[in-house]
Length: 365
Ligand code: NAD
Image: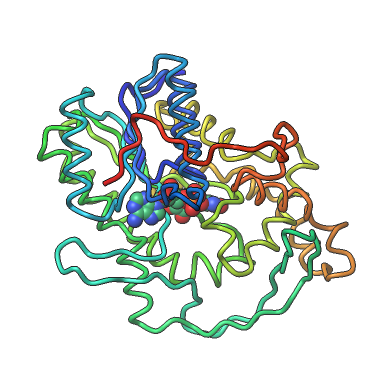
């Protein structure tokens, strides 16, 4: 399918970033440079899961003769941005698609050195809701009530600093100044909107404020570079199980109900299917599905009226006793285990493995 020639994926090791990298590399034949922050293996400790995802990705890319390099380090730092620009200049042609898919709890500001922490909290009023407490090892679950206090102004501002658009703009600036971006580059950052069950904790909460700041950043990038044919986009994605999303209160219960309903309708997609559809039908097409705020809507199947009615009905009657009937608990658990390489039928977990895997290309800053 039509796609980029040289893509940079910031946040490439897991979730939507990894899926985007897979979609452009194997769907479009793109050369890819990835940035992520993963723990590398130590003598007595394996690496974090995303490290092995990067190794696996690079090996698959090499089999197809696709350039793939991964830089492991803090994407928020000036130093890493410079390192990426140097790699692009030395080994690739200018980047024509920059995918910004970071999800991080902290950011050290590159100028002030101040550390900001994101909070996942409602704004204004306390939130009383429910979530799913899942014991991943045993497979048991409980639907439980949660009470969350609203964020302070400082927590809102810090969350915007971590998950908002400032760093996205700094990436564009650093690459553009170094001549590492094509004139007509495209760049896309990801957001989530969800429905009224998740609004108090997501869209109307601290994360939602940070995501609004992404819209501002998109407009700034388009204002500055649009004349030369460049384009910044925000894409609203569907709910999927990732390390970042499962840390959000309310979300595990809403997601597991949603998956059950979407699977019954035949519209459920995993990360890779979703990104493949986004690249194929939206990013490189002129007739995009755009909302009033100018965002690409990939959440059309999730927000389908019938799907949402069924989700809300299940939400109103779900409790611990009927959770397995009304929600896809085992699917949610399987997806969660797969994030860390477990729960796969094609893997023999009794076999010894070499945890010190690396590739010549995975560079740690
Ligand atoms: P994820 O946790 O799977 O991935 C986060 C990525 O960011 C990883 O590659 C990680 O290594 C990288 N990262 C974190 N801190 C870093 C740092 N300091 N330097 C370099 N790399 C760093 O998260 P995800 O759910 O795939 O989220 C990606 C984006 O998609 C986010 O913007 C998120 O809001 C958005 N999104 C997610 C969902 C969902 O349901 N998961 C839905 C819609 C939008």
